[in-house]
Image 1: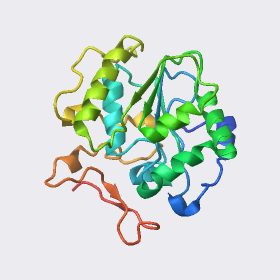
Image 2: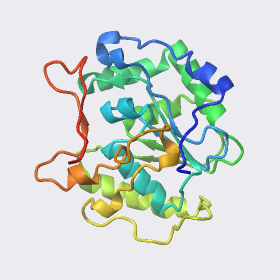
Image 3: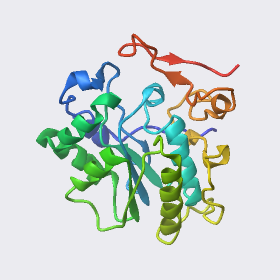
Image 4: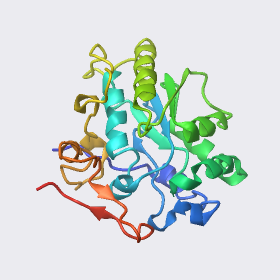
Length: 255
């Protein structure tokens, strides 16, 4: 039987359901609700990935880091030899309007936001954790505010959707090299392959594993290779169409 994510335990779900409302509703795509995690919530994660906030593909999946950026993250984890021993969380459970990102970084320190977020980070990690990876400035700030962070190495790198490809590749290449000396691969993983070259290649992406997605998700969810292979610069099968991007998502299936 195909694996799938059965969701959080009742106790963890109760904590997630206590997520505070966005501090400035107009700064968030809040009508679609929050998205919380992807990966293991049972304390078995060896790496915690912290990114910024969910996008439209994440809203469709109900899981974090599932779209093009998430498939880059999955490729990063694959290079570490991790097939399951990870958990992906965000600084914000609600999607942030890009133009409001810098302003909302300052709101990560709001007491209700910080207390809930830190409790989630605490609950999702255990003594098996070997490293924390903060991707982008929003994640760096959220991790800085995590006062109970376990005493494991912290790796700070650009967000996977960074527009400075060369800086991203350099930082991610160095991070993989450092983490290979720290993180124990999964039994079915391989951390001896190539890292990153001079451009992001399709081979640097990995599909999101079915075990990370809810039961019944279509086979193409979490694998946008077919989108990236088409002419143009499209990278995701889900988008927010203007001018109604506050209330409408468009999801395209492969032919």
